[in-house]
Amino acid sequence: MEIGFSKQLDDAIVEISKLPGIGKRTALRLALHLLKTDSRDVAQLTSAITALKEKVCYCKECHNLSDTEICDICANPKRNKQIVCVVRDIRDVVAIESTNQYSGVYHVLGGVLAPMDGIGPQQLNLDSLFQRVDQGGLSEVILALPATVDGDTTNFYIYRNIQGKVPCITTIARGIGIGDELEYTDEVTLGRSILSRTEFEKSYVRRS
Image (cartoon, rainbow, N blue to C red):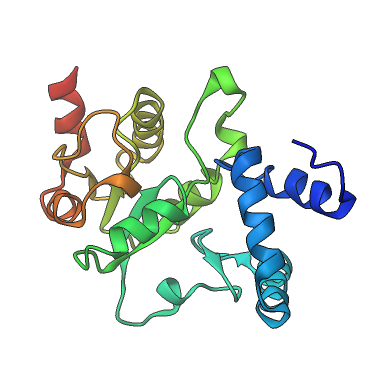
């Protein structure tokens, strides 16, 4: 969508529309809103976006987003470092944290195995997960990946690689519908799924 009478406005629309879920008409509305917004507020927005890109990094222990080398969750002495919950990305960490039912730490894979999309083990944070397991000291690994074909494939791949190396391997209870994403699951259901997690092997056998 080109307005035609303002190159700056056209350029803003093009850039805003590159954001996920933003079409050209929504981009136009946002651009016009920014034009009417106080210059100081716009400056704060652009500063926050620049800082987001330049200063946010990945935790060296769990790959969660952080402002420091070690994220607040991993650095928290009250968290149980013997329990690791494996999730797809930061959105799942936020979803589980919102339940206030989990006190362990996380391992963020950065996705799930999807061979058709060119996503194999090398594209995910799997080696560092296996290293955490090999170092010992873990009492449980919770597999909390999406209840999809790719999520289940990734769960099973992890299970085969850590089986016998950690005392307990569990998966969150299937109160979450097959195909549902954790970030869209209500807090009560997700919280109960965390509390009612089951041994992965038993869960896999039942579904097979």
